Length: 179
Image (cartoon, rainbow, N blue to C red; front, side, top):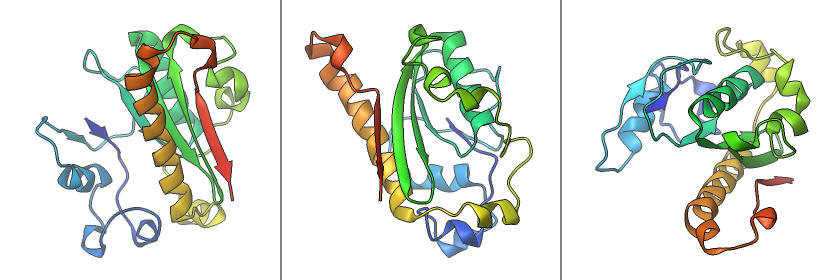
């Protein structure tokens, strides 16, 4: 399920894989068209909110640009006992991290190592960014690409390699870089 209430604008074209004829359409619909899969894909035109009903067995791949949305996902992961892979970036920085609900309140909980997740309400998904806010925090396409790549590498590691290894304490949970 692709969940995103955002509509594509011209400023998205320089940092996301959308074409000009996608402007004024929902991002989730356009991403659904790009997916090559035999699985059923559903597009939802909403912002992800805490308490949203989620299909059993879900794994979350999260690419959000604000703390309220990240917190909503983390709280949902805790509630249903699953995991998430979160990609984040700024203008020149990119990172991804993996989180499991069993890590809540411990050193691997993003709310512990990023405590501002609990208090920063800027960019709340129920109050979408204005053009002015977007201009104040532009993003490079390479930062988006790196964050997504890190997220997929963590997914590969945790879904394929982690099962084969014995030393759980040494597993990667966060990857980051800046340019």
